Structures are given as structure tokens and as C-alpha cells.
Length: 90
Figure 1 (cartoon, rainbow, N blue to C red):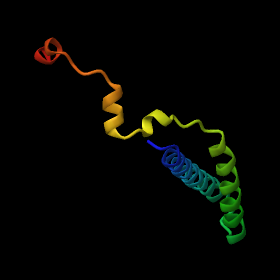
Figure 2 (figure 1 turned 90 degrees about the vertical axis):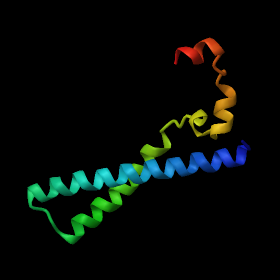
Figure 3 (figure 1 turned 45 degrees about the vertical axis):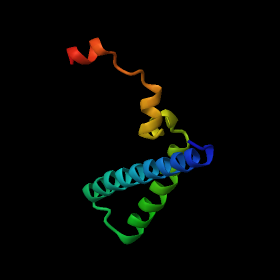
Figure 4 (figure 1 turned 30 degrees about the vertical axis):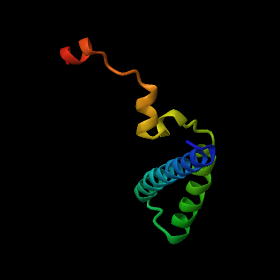
């Protein structure tokens, strides 16, 4: 796989991770604020803004295993083929 394609895949994975973190933070903080009786438009806006910033910081530190992003053809080529004895046992 070309390095440029791999970088795009890693970037997309980071973006997905960032969105997941952001959504989980928003859900938790909204439930907490609802329990405290702080359901206002201003509080929700601050929750969204803070969650987005924190998710961005956290996703930068996440290590992504590039070997899991290899296409199936390359992954199978890297994996040793089964011998006849192994295939007959399976």
C-alpha cells in the first residue's frame, strides 16, 4: 500500500476516534448536568465546545496500529499458508 493511502486511512481513523470520544463526552456531561438541573442553552453550548476540544487533544495521543489497515491481499501474503497436514486437521 502506498504511504499516502495509509496516511489517509490513519487520518480517517483518528477522525472517527475523535467523533466517538466527543459524542460519549457530550452524552455523559449532558446527563450529569440534567441531574444537577443545569439544562440551559448556554450550558449545552459549553458542553459541546469543551467536548470537541478535549476529544481533539485526546485523539492526538491515540496510537493507531497501521498493520491492521493493510488490505486483505497484503495481510494474507504476510500470513504463512497452511500446510496439507494442518488443512486436513481443520
